[in-house]
Amino acid sequence: MIHPCPSWYQDAKFGLFFHWGPYCVPAYLNEWYSRNMYATHTEQSRYHVAHYGPLSRFGYKDFIPLFTGEAFDPDAWADLAILSGARYAGPVSEHADNYSLWDSLVNPVNSVRTGPHRDVVGECFKAFRARGLRTLATFHHQWLWGWFMSTDPEADVYDPANEVYYGPALPLETNRYAPYRLPDASFCTMWRDKILEVVNGYAPDVMYFDSRANIIPASYKEEVIQQYYDRVPSGILTYKQEDFPAEAGVLDLECGRFAESAGHPWQTDDRLEDQVTWCITQNPTYKKASRVLQQLADVVSKNGNLLLNVGPQADGSFHPDAVRELTQIGNWLRDWGEAIYDTRPYRCFGEGPTQILESDFNQKKINEELQTGVAKEETIGEMTSRDIRYTYKAPYLYAIVMRWPEDGRVRLQVPVREAFSIRSISLLKDSVPLAYHLYPEYVEVVLPSDFPATEDPIVLKISGQ
Image 1 (cartoon, helix red, strand yellow):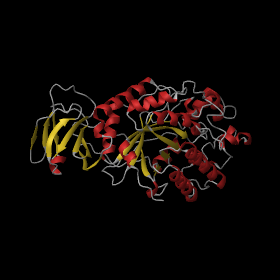
Image 2: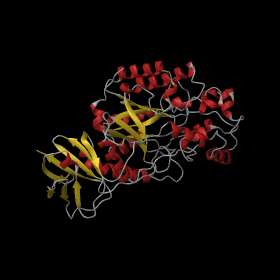
Image 3: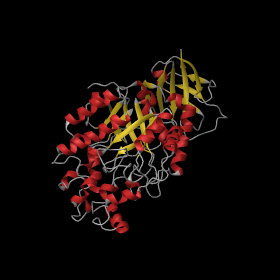
Image 4: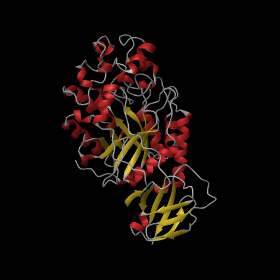
């Protein structure tokens, strides 16, 4: 089924999502705790046994009663999304741990019957829509096939009485990315029915799929695609690798980017967390807002959207350091967001010395994490004042300068090279015309000497003839 990317999604540019579940109770290393606690060679497994006891006596299911979410406030989550400048947002609907965050009749292990006793998806969607936000549902539950299988034969996952939490016992090799034994009809039916329950009950504007959906037969995915777009004609599906047909939605590069501008809309999902985790952890640290803003500018200039994760604490509140950085991101977008929202890529995405190679959290990296329990990702450092990204909204060309130049002058090559007819140049934030000089290879713009220097990007608004 061919489904064009809706214009609202291309205009939105920036979304926010929240990894929240029973894995937030131990909050140790990352959200793969639910899997790695059963892999006895991993640090998380050793931590679990030392702090909670043997896997036969305290399994992942035993975190569920401790996941009470007593501070969960969907209006506060909506306020944070608005504060950050996000245009679409949503909680992780179900991670790989078989814990559904909606009022599910398909899966009894859910946040209404257990834990917080709250319909997290439903309450968030209501609060988000009341604030004008588009909604997002994310699905990771194809990973459940083999997810809990343990190298400890006494682990509680092998007790038939616990199948409702973990699924039936499977060969250990099913916890690989590409197992020999693929999901059976019962698993695939449950996979499909969980998604359709959210589609029909909540109608998310964006439906995001994590990787490994390649193990699900095409017929189940085709049914999901068809029913989703019948229910939400203006919606959009995002997928990873080649797990869905390209014409069915938008490609998502996890923690990745394109080196050049893409000829199609795309998305990267990444984290505010500075550790390699998608959930809250003990002693968390966060990326600086300036680093996220540079990433956002680079992604948008190449025809992409940034979906940023921030993990709530187990009680449902947010760490103050995360709130601080999201607030700064939102403040910047209120001042300079005209260069981000509703724009389209220019003929040339940018210029500057920092080289960004095409990257994705691909199958090779996933397999390394499966073997070691630790994810390895490529880090893109902060850019320089000579790194510039361009966006366009007729009749304006926006030059996003990644850092304030020490000499107070910006040299732009692309407008000259692309023969953009310049009428005037101003700082987007204050609209005061700036002096500039045209040279054969670049235009030099003189920044105001009284403008406060900043680590965040600045934007030059170039008016065309």
